Length: 320
Image 1 (cartoon, rainbow, N blue to C red):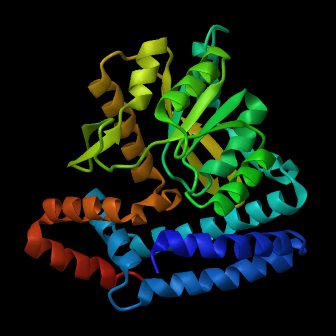
Image 2: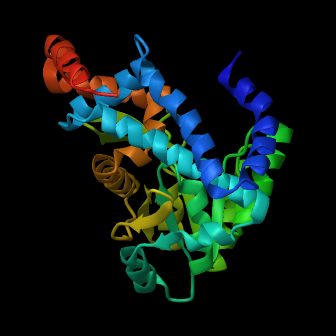
């Protein structure tokens, strides 16, 4: 079964499970998620494990030697995020708001650029707590999410229900004509909203531009740079870090840049620094295209023979 079809099939059962989980006492719910997490962690030890190989390649590419701690914490973060979604589904966003914070650096950048005449663009990668953080962000400032919805109408409807519980406005981008999407973004910007997009997709397309990360060439979306330049609004690269059940929106220095290449490379380079600092928040490293980039970066770092030897050495030091 294709992975997209698999997600369509399990979406409704997962939603029912979230509703059930959200009604359990906190200790019971956490114990249940820990049991499921143990299964996920066991996958690291499976012969030829894709997740193990990917995390090791990340370590080789970045000069780290802690693949198991990185992966173990990824699973722990997923457990905490699942509990947040369960509470959101059952009880609303109050608990989530109490455990979400906005980094003072972002507050400073927001105040620096905010002049009442227009909005700004926040770009974040696919972090585990990315969507959840929008509740806290919208509580701080008017927020519009740019969302690439599922093709399945049923799964799309479920996703919309969760976003509505989080609070921000949103723009669906997959099944809406591109011109309409751009008009909706422009309207949000003119209204003074912070427009948030997840932008670490690297599929080459008509509206992408070549950038570099981990010493490798990738193709990154150019729409943020194009819109920011057109409306003369800043881009603020962001990241979502989880510390247990606490979620924090982090922000880099915002910037105004009319050159599309320089603007896009700038937020990509910011993402790279966040990945190096908090790899366990970046679940999208397991996307097959990113896994290929990491494999290339690992091979470039140590060469084909050295790569195999280093991979074996790092793998032998990984303890479950």
